[in-house]
Length: 405
Image (cartoon, rainbow, N blue to C red; front, side, top):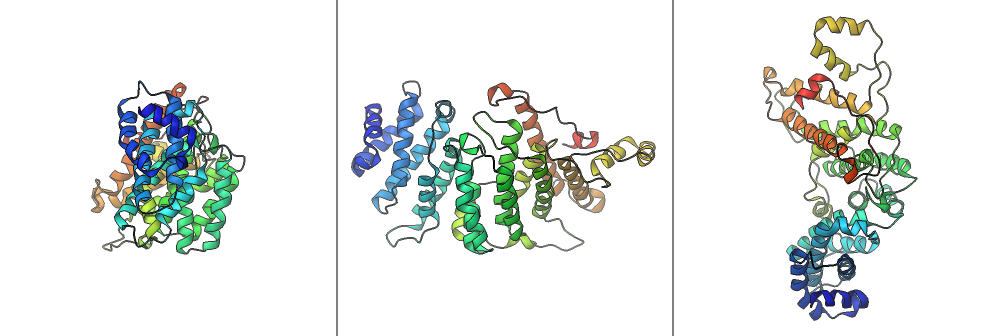
């Protein structure tokens, strides 16, 4: 049966099985993974995952490419359905075989015998596999990936090769699990942000950078069981304003009667585009970071206007405003300050009294923020299910922002 075949393949390795045998087993194995969960042992699933990685790691074209597509789909389904069980069993995967497979499928020159559609399908499927597999990366993966790819981004100096390396960094960097544990996160993030700033205004750079930072912020805030990134409040305080700026740029607010795509409309590389597909929006990832760094991003600079306090004043009326003006400004988390400033700024453009459309920019912004805020509160209320320790004190928002979100 298929279960016996899994054990045989696991014992002999993918390289010891012929292509015809692997092709013949693919459909039966897929059916077993999808419908035979009760009769399937976690050891069998782990063996199957390793077989699939071995097949994917073979970078031949022709019939082997079709075989890789079948087994990458099987790998994706196994990780999606059995990810928690595999994590509890402490499955550890090396990131380099998947990295080599992604580079060969998405970035290497295409052979004459290979169709563009087939290759594109494989590259997209592999990127989905990596997103599920990175929580199982072996210890030290975060530091190894940073050492491999950050110098490539720096050497590219804004060229297509730099964008491709940056995209791969954002795709492969783990945000949970043993592979995400590192003592060097502050240094990695500072270098990542510095390189991101060199491509300021390029939409693909913004999307990749903000998506990774949002993942790291969420995992760190929730202290995910199995391992999570530890990043200092000072680093988050320096990152939050840049993310708010990228979020504002992504909204492309009109100025007067002008319209256009803005500076963020430059095209990214063809290979990088395949990897970036289905990764969400800058606005959505920025909202995730702003919400999950609330209370964890240091304090706004002393003497600032403090938009968060201004929202409280506007909510309480002019009498309260006079009282606040006579008192020293209160300390405010940088993430809350930037969130309130962003909402206050966008509202000027989107408010109906200015001819704006509530359902457009401001509506999207508040929807993204509220979705992640509700998600954070629900997750923090059920910490025993997924986290290793309790969260910080509950987050408190100004009343006006709370009701809007």
